[in-house]
Length: 101
Image 1 (tube, one colour):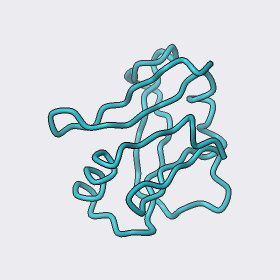
Image 2: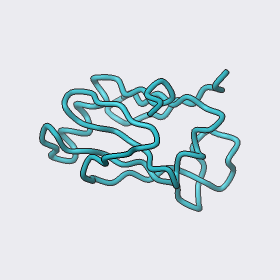
Image 3: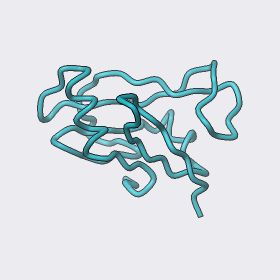
């Protein structure tokens, strides 16, 4: 697991908890979608989110405010060249991608 590639601010975690009615121990899975753009060089791909059970073997994950945020092995490629931070601005989730060096 590489938590350094995925960071979720406590404020963002609380946003997910409130918006999705999450309970401690639950999880949010990020997955790739074949449309849109999410601020990376992966043109025509964007991120989707879904409530899920915490996996036993996530490719990338972090736990914040009792919630696990993760990517599976099949979607991990989206972060191969990036570190992603999830934060909240103006009451909306914002994904910030920085080249991973």
